Image 1: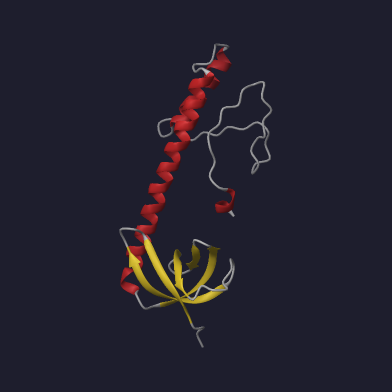
Image 2 (image 1 turned 90 degrees about the horizontal axis):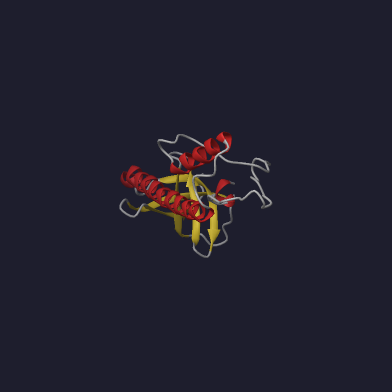
Amino acid sequence: MIKLLGSGEYAVELPEQRSDGHFGLAARDYTHATAPNRRYPDLATQRLLKAAIAGRPTPYSTEELIALARHCTTQEDNAGKVERQVRKSAAALLLSSRIGERFEAMVTGASGKGTWVRILRPPVEGRVVRGFEGLDVGDRLRVELVKTDVERGFIDFVRAPPSG
């Protein structure tokens, strides 16, 4: 479900603009914060709040806020890509000694780009490279691990006959 929502982005909302708010929280006015020593967007938000509480002008122009929002979104997206790559490579390394083993799986994605399954033990995702025809999201099947590529984070499965 989270994948379908897509990633968020930082955006500047001016007082005279109508806000769509946060869909998932059903809140019209929204901001979030974690720890300013870790996240620059939080530091900028806290500076804006501090100025508003003190009745001072904002510490950033609208153009600076738009540029900051764009930059922070890009950097967060870049960090997410690195995190995903590390997880995928770790999963490929974990399975690299298990080539030929069979696993129960569920289809998590099916498109022109490929068909993806998640095995439960260990809980990792990989691509079905043979026998994916007719599979759709939510289908359960048995797969055999045929290849891993740790550097690229690839895990390849083929459809296996049902156990029994």
